[in-house]
Image 1 (cartoon, rainbow, N blue to C red):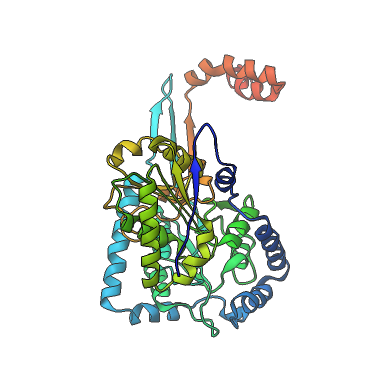
Image 2: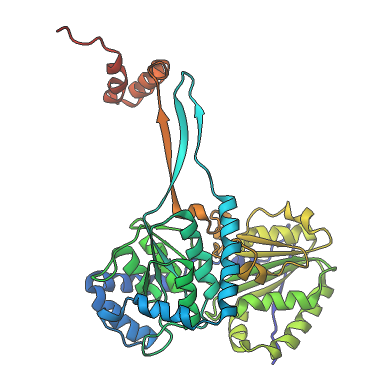
Length: 438
């Protein structure tokens, strides 16, 4: 069965309203937010019992309060059962993620103040974080690594992993459990969906609440994360996967078709994919490749379901195509043009950018090193992807001398008077009062 993708035209002076609407698709679904709000309220009111009920309702899994936590023995058994080759690949992937994470960590710094004191910043790990690892249609081993390893590198002492069980008996995929254990989770719970986000944010009898929740998920998980923000910190809105491809007539249609479908196969049905190019010939050939390649893929049904969120954009020029990409602000962006590094400079909004014909998006998903947990739904225009620093807090440091404070006193007193905050002024000025006579 062919995979027809709708083609829209883009001329900056005469924008297509249908494309405008596509580019403005919200990051979260209001209907999903309503469901998420109900689930969060249920977990807050019912605790463990609500988690057990919701696991049966949504996942078809029979749990009890006693089996919510995955014991160390079960985690160790998954580790012992893994093949040497799988363990080797885990170790190599962890090495790549950790190396990239450490290289990008912000370091404590300081400068001298005007009169001999110190100003600066220090970074400290968050003491307890929750990591959500989706497990619906595929055991996302890579997501476990791309989140937990960064928390470990950051020095987080309590790393809580939640992932849904995939079998009625409550078992977690052994490869996924092995990855979670290897990557450094200190606690693991077999719960998923919005109920996992609620439990991490508010706690239950079994699960203590965390300070921050990270990790991707489907539309309901993304909505739940949005609703608990403020109770906990969040990494970003990381919902169903997206890809955009900026290409010219030098791009290989077979490669583009393969990359296009790599993100549509995830399984939520809400994934989005966009190809922007000034070449009608390329679009024709990519469509032919999609129709050919989909017949060879095991997850063709998922791709067809998600293809409703895919678009071809025939732009007036390559500059206009780049403008479409920036407005889309995709989670993943591939640049497949004659001079990809030149066009990289024109990109302002993207979670991760894959430059050149030899950099498929799957390299970022599995092997390159940067985390594949990235902003979706246009939020790459204001959010960044997950890094080691996502698991750390920044504290500013001010260590004045007497001379520093004396120099700053006029600033403090003037601004305090302007704002009507005389106690602020006094707290500085009183340090220069003569001591009372004995």
